[in-house]
Amino acid sequence: MSTVEERLSALGLTVPEVVPPVADYQPAVLVDNIVYVSGQLPLVGGELPAEGQVGAEVTPEQAYELAKQCGLNLIAALKTVVDLDSIVRIAKVGGFVASAAGFTGQPKVINGASEILGQAFGEAGIHARSAVGVSALPLNTPVEVDLIAHIG
Image 1 (cartoon, rainbow, N blue to C red):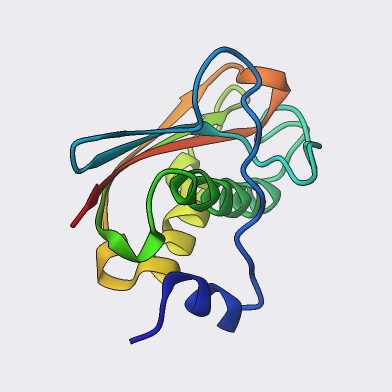
Image 2: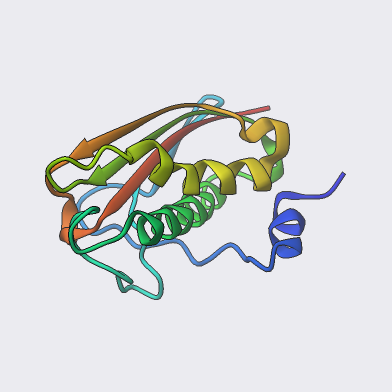
């Protein structure tokens, strides 16, 4: 059995440095055996690769890739409070998509994060999820994703 980081490496990916909070919160908090990870933006090196609403300034395909980055940033936040290989289940993922009027493809966008979590954690990465369209998100990001994980 490989580790989370080995599975990501096989995909050509690495766990990035944790994204510093943009306000007054912690990236992740451990309570008993549950980890609550704050909403992660698709920041890369402190910068947003794209801004705006999906279905207007951002294509669904771009947003899917941004959600993948959110997934990697979620993993980075998890790593600040627990050993990644101690996670027995990603229990719940919440995905938020800044959506132009009439855009209804939120589930396909958030699949970017869900798929990364599944690839990284295997069976433990299969989770419950919501994918919600909103009019705007912090910093004009197109996507934000949070999660709840259970450790063993």
